[in-house]
Length: 356
Image 1: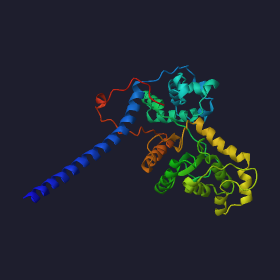
Image 2 (image 1 turned 135 degrees about the vertical axis):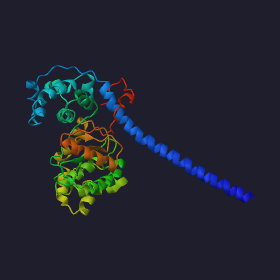
Image 3 (image 1 turned 30 degrees about the vertical axis):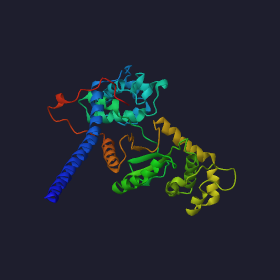
Image 4 (image 1 turned 30 degrees about the horizontal axis):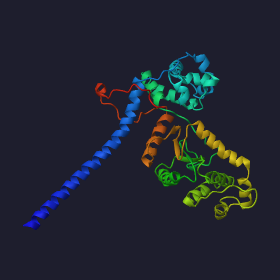
């Protein structure tokens, strides 16, 4: 009798544990997904209801149309010029410090003291949202308050994947960064899932990683012999084996053994590793990173959009699809549409300005 009772109790405990575990797992998954959607929806609604204070200086089309970012847009349809002028005068500049001073996107194009390095891509985004929401300027303005675009320069950079890719995933990385090492299999999987995309690597060696700068120089020296990606992979494969190595004035240079295993011309590799122009190339990547707001590694851009979401293949595939849409002048909030008639039931927007 006691054994039967124990068996029944055990079964009940197992059922309870299964139900409870399933509930808590499902609840945590729902919270995680709901949190992501909630953050996005909150940004969108906050941007619509809580506009930043922008000083509209009333720049005219005759003035703005001469700026290079405007002329790069090509021919505009009838009426688009006037609508774009109105939007640029009301939208904040994408540079945070200037935006907090009330500088408009239009002013960033016209005044030397208000110049913003990411303004050209933001102007293109302005035309995209104008064409997406032609009858709703407030919606277009909301996009420009929360979305930022900045296109990394990948000219003359070796691309992995499709060499003719129109959409490029750019990584700013550090060969001594463990998080960068962990990201490499994800990028390999991404190229399997989306073979039409190209991947570029730019250097951001962190100051507290003493081997990172010599490793970046070694990768660029290998690039001079057309073997950048082979050295890139070899350096990441070293993992914790990367040590503090400065480039000496003579003799062997850092990572020469990897160059030897790759079959590189060692004399050329040594000369290129000591060439100041090679290190300047690395430091140019670092300067560009800082100008675009990169603060750590790995930092990714999909086309002209920095990836702020949790890194995964699915995240990249979604952002690649979004970039395709923007290449066709169509913006997507990446939010599920609000059911018709449900707008009044939406959460109240915060009074604070939407974060840049």
